[in-house]
Length: 173
Image 1 (tube, helix red, strand yellow):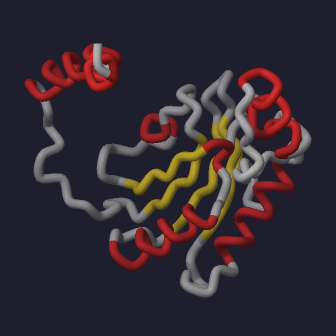
Image 2 (cartoon, one colour; image 1 turned 90 degrees about the vertical axis):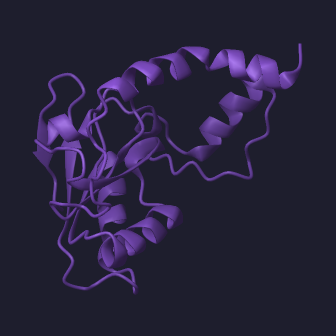
């Protein structure tokens, strides 16, 4: 079996599910701008359904997801594009409770764990781990607020999403 065949087989369930999805697809013609002007930075954690949690519909927001909901250089690059080209006029950074990226002291712990368990050297990566979640959120909000390419008047705030209750608690800092 070739690598291509085994890779294709690994995704057959998704391609099949997409066939069903296309039969009721209703988002065609949706404009590429954020209809409600929201840029949302949140975690990739599958326990978060950002549209439902914030009363949004498809097309209302530009959603940026990464491990830990951190404002990385790539997040800032994407926010610049979203603000100037995609209708974003406010930004919410929303990490969550019980986040793995906020449960370890620092990146070295992650590097060591991956090395010990899988033999993979990840020292070239910055995972942005921080067990002071509110401190990390404050840092990330400031990165957006003071980015030279983003408007100084851009409203920016933070909130914590509770994965056990679905509640979003403002933490504007």
